[in-house]
Image (cartoon, rainbow, N blue to C red; front, side, top):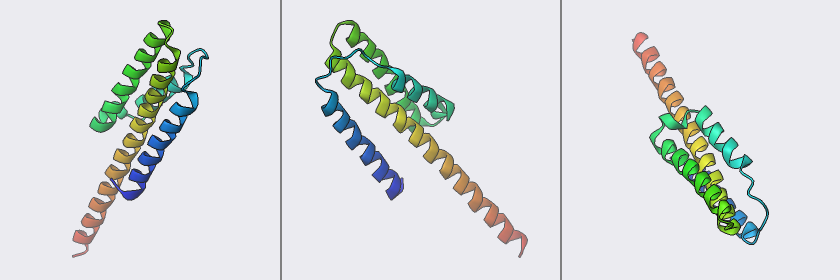
Length: 121
């Protein structure tokens, strides 16, 4: 993982903490749109096929279900917190999928360069 990826993950984690603190006292109805769209986005970019991303995709799905369960029990504060975590997990799954794709592209480019060098010898 490169330095920029580490920074992006740390920034994401910090944003989640701030969001949890900001909405900790919220009693509004559970809004799952961001989580469900994040999960859909992760699935669309192939997170299920990248082991590390698949883990976070699964955590996002489980978090969304847990948030719904908590909301049904009128534990809105905990449900909101769980929902934010599910959103962050889905976003991390997307980021990890992109990182994997970029790594594969870089390795393919290195291989093309190697073959070009060999053909010139």
